[in-house]
Amino acid sequence: MHYRKLGQSGLDVSTLCLGGMTFGEADATSMMHGAGSPAEQAWAVLDRAIEAGINFIDTADVYGHDGLGERVLGQWLARSGKRDQVVLATKVRFRMSPGPNGAGASRLRIVRGVDESLRRLQTDRIELYQIHAEDGTVPEEETLRALDDLVRAGKVHYLGCSNYTAWRLVDALHTSDKRNLHRYVALQAQYSLAVRDLEREHVPLCQHFGLGILPWSPLAAGFLTGKYRPDAPAPADSRYATDRWKNGLKRYNTPRHRAILEALDSVSAETGAPLAAIALAWLIGRPAVTSVIFGARTVAQLDDNLRAADLVLSPEQVKRLDDASAFEVGYPYEFLARLR
Image (cartoon, rainbow, N blue to C red; front, side, top):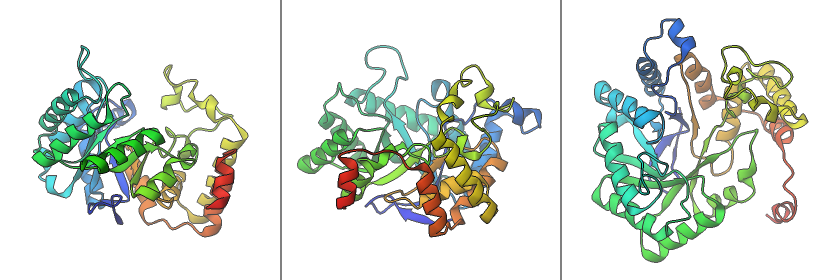
């Protein structure tokens, strides 16, 4: 496992980050094979991740019903004795309770949210506390002052944001500097071979201001594992076979997405690595990316993804993946890219 500074902070995190979005959720396939309760499955994955050198774990208060993801992770932290080996990240913003103040990025919601997260996580501090999405109804200075108070109180060590538009992120950084407040050190955003929109504005922004990028959905909800093929029905035990996801594969039935899978297949044939590891390794090598957040329901899935940590793609293989996944950026982005 390799480690990098999170943006311009002094915090060292593994280049792979274990995402806890599914912690505690039932997985029928695993339970049929005697893998234990959903919580026990998550604990086994966490044990293996720490053993492999992952020190970075990301969750959010809204993952699972009534904070289930945080509660399962908190139980593992308490029983494992490995709290000091973990860089713990969680998020606040979306609705956790009824009423007008049950959601958002107001001071009230943030101060209440961090205490509730600390209780569920069974810990006294959170290394990286993130605003899950910008809140256009709340002045950014109010959000930042509330977060700054949490850092000064020792409840939180570093600050991050997720799913921010570029202009709002620049405004937040400017406000932090102007008001002498602790600033965001990381941006969590959707980024993968299938979804490269972040490269238009956010990647150069993060490079310029020194933020670390933490991609989420790096495998495009499983599409980049090769398990799903655009012209074939989804496996019966997969998410895309369910009513909720059954139309999800249609978005990937395009020449570009088929080219991405073909490029992944060819690199896999050359390296012997699974498609998921190749997709993750490609992301690890992108500008400004610090750590890639991925989920794993089973230890076997985790082990496949762990191969990305030491997988070195050749320049030719990277270019093949770049070319297959390229998107039309258009004016003025194409023009500006030529000037850089």
